Amino acid sequence: MIDTDSYRIGSFNIQKFHENTYKKIGIIKKIIKDNSIDILAIQEIFSKGALDKLLAALGTEWDGRWDSPNSRSVSAAEGYAFVWNKQRIDLSRRKNGEAFEPVIHNQYPHKNGMTLIRNPFYGRFVLKANKMTEIRLLNTHIMFSQKREENESDDHDSSEKLPGDVTKRKRELEILSKYILPKIENKDYDRFWNEMDDICRKPCATILLGDYNLNLRASGAKDTFIDEPFFIITDGKSQKRIVTVQSDLTTLKAKPKDGGPIKGYANNFDHFTYNDLRPISTKCWAVDVPNDPQYYAGDLDKYKKDVSDHLMIVMELSLI
Image (tube, rainbow, N blue to C red; front, side, top):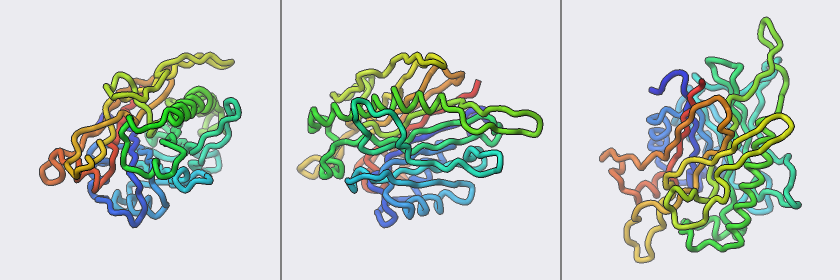
């Protein structure tokens, strides 16, 4: 178990997850629990039924929410979820006890008239050990391509991407990281009353996380890089130093045309972005394919079939 003052936030693109999709739910549950995840942001979860199936496996100690952004494209509207350990995490609540339910976030300044193809899923959470401490999460899956057949392809080889689509992805990350994330971090909600005082609950961390379909140069990936993994924003309230982290490779290479086995990882698409001037200590990593011979022992082809073409990523927050 991790230290009680530390919390683990995960992000997982569980490839094309419908309730009727073939998935080894027991393995997904094992990955989540073995890594002591407190809150998990999920991408490519296409229905509430899929979430219900996962929650049934995780057990009564877990809760979750699902939603799908409005879109003209079925692929763009694929859906998001949050699941969390109820023993350590709760939804933020108003004075009357009503929960702030996670929502698809679509209120933001549009840069040069540009809107996001797939809006993020926004959740506000509090620590059971200290309900004055809030974690705000923006769960995103930046569109791989506007062409539906490319989004639904297993081929994530970056050499196949079109420059125009890459440019659009970078613009979407700019909207998310430079406009939406700082605004969410600055936002003051209803005041939280304890028995003695009026205290405004402030976020200890506001994090953009998910599948960006873009790489950090430090990952060693071939191309399709994030232009600004670090930048400074100064607004009327504060200065923010926005960083994008998690440089492990996280996508499995496409199966070769000759039907041979998958060989290794291709891209570093899964990340966390946050203001590192906040008083928290963080570390992050990708969770490798389980090496237990009972399961995969590094068999990436089987893992891709049973679980996903992505690895789960984890950020550990140490509150200081």
